[in-house]
Length: 510
Image (cartoon, rainbow, N blue to C red; front, side):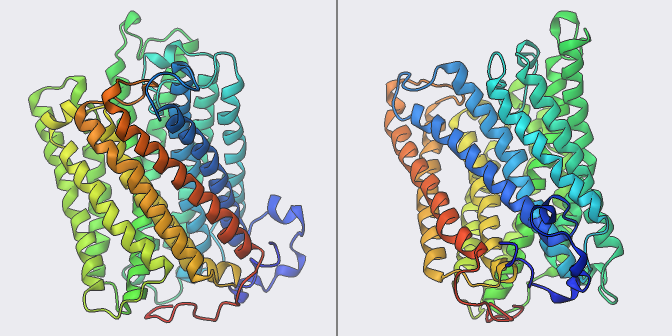
């Protein structure tokens, strides 16, 4: 593997001879490509762990009654699945892409702070170990949902503290990574590359990095207050001492909503590279794309309470957050329109990256529509905490973020590994994933509309059919990702396959 990942860009390696080799190369890595690779490997590992938890959930929900796990363990699974997927799988994967591609795209020799880059990666390992170790502490893992709502978190065992500490460390890692990206993008662009000439992926990550720096301390504040409530006798969120659990929700979602845009904006950036390449024309409306991305980021700060319509809120508040949430659909619509306009009358070919990008646009738009439906306060009051919400955010996170990650992998893997991934392998992965994904999550819309609440290990008989279908789809989807690991990632890392040409994609900007 170490032999393969070197020859993507020779100019950055003039001083390579005195670099450490073997395990030291990875432990003391300062090369942005090595650190990007580490992030991606870490992320895929966490994806598999989170996936195992998801499959345990789906196995339990295959039919009514309690088959495999008791309700307490079930809630631990749902909670840890959420935390691991958000903080361990999606975010590190995009940071890995940023590390690999941003210096190459702006013509920098490396990231601005190479050693801090190393530090922000290695911080994630103890955090991940702590999160997984939570299962083995007295009382089991946290079972309060990935949002860690008070007052439930105030009554949990010591694993709650482990999870809080892990999230602190991950937050510190994210902030360092963001500072690194901002400094790199603002200070290290090649001569003549103005901000408005910068590749779209750099733009989306620059804006994402600002979002991370703005909201990570807010999360840290919320979980620190939870910690002091648990151990130091404060009553921020403890009603018994005059605290307010709803305040926790406000603080958490003020972080949580920008967070979901942190997970999707880099995906927009990746898709904005792939669509022009395979349509063989320039990205339509580059400037409007930049402004749309910025608008999404700004608006993401004034919509948080749409997660809390059912918590009780004055009608004025409900109306404000409802309209603000609907407003986010406008810049998002601009982006989708621009991608479609880029494809319009282009010389389209559908290699694997393009398939994933088009799949992304299609399924992400469906997820966006369900989000628009949920933004309507009276509808949301009915659908809050049902499987409709689960379907919505998996449509935007799996078919959004994860598909963009796959698209980016297939697109840039020739550059990273020096070998082409055989098209049939990628296409098999795409169709298998797309069909299994929709079989899994589409029925959940019906379950939610019929009133099935989420986070329960058991359910009444009338929900059986759709749950059984969803469970079958989930196992098929999980199998597709194992296939991807064994038959796409490993051979590419080992350098097996036909050698990639200088410009792997016969395209406008290869």
